[in-house]
Length: 439
Image 1 (tube, rainbow, N blue to C red):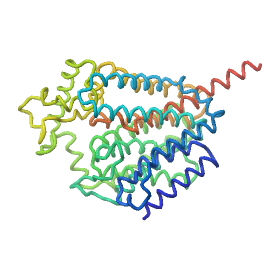
Image 2 (image 1 turned 120 degrees about the vertical axis):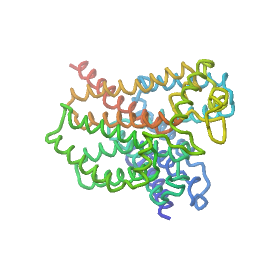
Image 3 (image 1 turned 180 degrees about the vertical axis):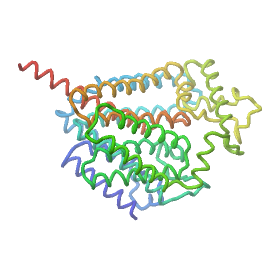
Image 4 (image 1 turned 90 degrees about the vertical axis):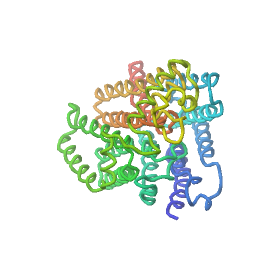
């Protein structure tokens, strides 16, 4: 019943706040629906069977129309990441002509096109730094909610948690990849918060999310969190652009984090993490060596099909390229289990290059914003850009070991970068130019 109450309160609260405070709460509603997704919950039959996601997007569109005089100043066409996303979308549409599994590719096109439109609407609703924080907090709230469900469910499939995922990530590893970037962002907000109440909120959200990663037992996400959090802490500690007593604060946070990690990890998690360095031999799942064989086969597929094979293309032809002496379990048609090679085999070399450019554009955009923030002396926003960079890094590590090209969370993280560029760079430069013209 608690989950139903949270679902209802989130709906009512976001609608009210969209009119009373800021229209960006409409996007927060969409984020909440993505994570809560009543149709996937045991209590789904107890709430009206409505297209909640579609209704939230329609609500976003309505608020964009109502607030058009304000949102028109959010010029998405000047944001580099959106340009690369649009080109990648066009290539994905073109690849339909090469698709070996047209139905699956049409599903990909439908999802990716919808996501692009939703990201544009969300971008238009983020007009300032406060709105950006609200959008990011929406992600953190959704991640906490999913983590809470994982906590309530517990390990129900051996040493894993299954059946509690999202629409586009129903399996355990996909859910862990969606949750993992929230840990480093929670860490940033815990550090930057001024009051005990705020710190407690982000600490609780971070602990629940970290606990979910432990319960799910995803090695890829654990590795991603370890790398991204370590890099962020290193930047906080060694950066020359710091608050007073920042090094001491970071040291205390590191100690608290290690104590918390020692408390939530268990024997099953430790044993599974040990298999990162060793091969895990089972009848149903490929070993690390087999996965490398799949990756090598994907490269060969790309040589024979440079324009790509469309969605599930590798799955359809893998039996031809994977040597017959390799044990692939019950089926010879297997997934490549890497987003990089997923894009290469499905969208071809053109799509792969554009995907690299998209992520590189996000990195260089954040670097440009940080330079501007140094000139402005905005320390908190400066490290927010590092937190976003580390969250993208976290997802990039996770998606190296699973197919997540169409992941909503990847789109959201790129949206946060685009909105930051608009808020902290484009609008600041516009104000500076107006000031010069008035002199």
